[in-house]
Image (cartoon, rainbow, N blue to C red; front, side, top):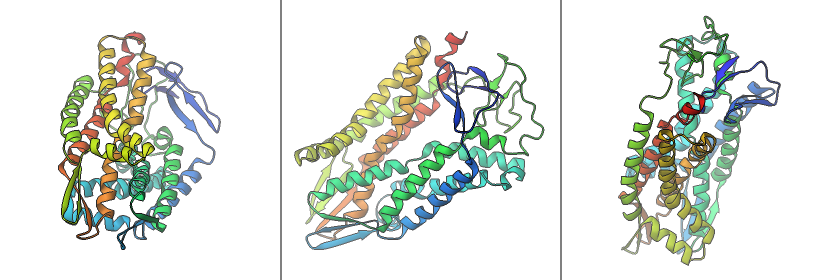
Length: 397
């Protein structure tokens, strides 16, 4: 099998891979594919278990909150309904996509792609389903939401009694199974296992500079369209640096209102206390919650600024090529840390859903959290628009 590295575009010929082994690019050390023993059975088991634990976590009590003798108990489903009916369709939609729509869709597609039916399914339908799975897989925020739950619990424990319900423990098991299923999933294995898509496929026999890697399925071809998934074949992402720069500048503009406008409003006995990200960190630090304050400060303030600076570095390295190995490591770091800024968004969602004690104490979302969410999404789009192969073009020549 001849393949091209998705990060440096080095053409690599892979003869065979033993079970429990993986193929790594000799140039940039990117993992090209991996082989897991009993892969179908393991992915099916973890995907099915993840679905069971997810549905088991939706309706039972997730967390209970007691203050001034008043107890508020909420499930994940109740939190979603509360957000949609009383506060923000935007936050409710984000919450629903994160904890329900995306995981259910991905687990269902993983189950389908690792059954015998996948091999005989109509090629047209298989292509669309495989493209959908490839697009959804990087959007996993379930582990970020779990960390946000723990952060919210630390914030509330200092002045209220908390009790984790059955839904919380079921959700932990869901996250563990879901992450394991995703780690076992191999993109190339899924496409090669689809018999109908590969029926008339002619694989390249020799390493050639005219080969182009399909951005969707990874197949190498020389024409205008991929033989396997029919996507347009391009040497590089169209206007990659321009799109990345545009998304990054948009995120920098949004960073100002995101940090200085209130993200939530605490209403206690009719007294409104709006809170920004900065004031929230300050309150946590003064209350002695140093680990939580540090985590929020890093995830919500330092990481967005660092991402903008690091992406600027990558854009400069495209124009002035130097040390592509270090630049590629920076790109991988950006991909990893991009999601973690969503912690603050989920913390607000959890607090708004949980702290609803009538006239005694309420928490409501404010416009700042919308700007912050848009800023994080713009930064994720900026990283996804960047083509890391541009860092290696001069070196490969």
